[in-house]
Image (tube, rainbow, N blue to C red):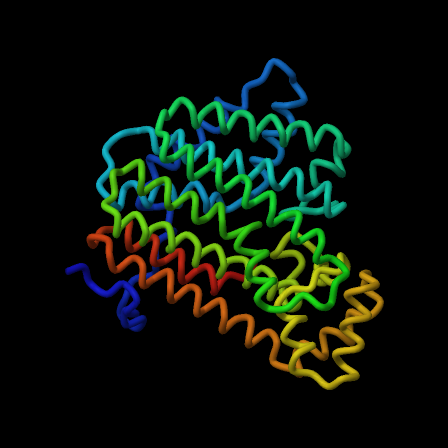
Length: 336
């Protein structure tokens, strides 16, 4: 039986952890080459904007999940590179569209594509990347993988629309919040690890385990993202503290603060969500800290991380599984 991956080594003697992508360093290099090759277009602006957003310092976590999931099940082929690249294209297309919808002007510490080139080119290049990802999906030729990814794109789009309808609505509760982040964020994490498992010929138990691993990892990742909006470092995050509040997004820190705070505190946060902007930022930050909202959000993230780790117990011991465990830990420890 595989060792319990949720156990922690003695940090007094253990060596410093290696970056999670080190176990698939050659695959990662091939992934980056494939991404650059498949960005090719006869329209120069497509390549320019595509390369700009691809090169803007992202963590490549979703394609990394494909590589690690496939290798963890002893996959020996090379189609996982194509699969990982198309997952990154899907993710990048959603970023381009999101920044237009959110009217963002900064991502990962530099100007967004829509700020640099305008909304129309950003949307259209996002469409190109989505289309290219489906083209690459057909090349892989796996109907089960196509079924997972086509379903995921619909759920992601619904999640984005749901988030849009949540804006300015202080009545969004915790259940609706989790439903939203499952669609808009966790779904692509889930699809990445799930399709990696399918490609590797996983048995039903391992396939389900890797599917759920990605889901819980994605939820943990988004919970920390929403926490950092109220306590993070703007330079490290590459975006401004309070952006979610400015956009009127009712994320878990605010939901918890309204639930646990005084009627007066809840009223102020409700007003801040309805109005958007940063006029009430200092007051909201004080309430969020006073009500333990950040601690609660972190606890929920740690719960999701622990659930992700549990799924890995169904996989054989390997450096790839170890890297996936490290990802689950890093998801809740990150500062950006």
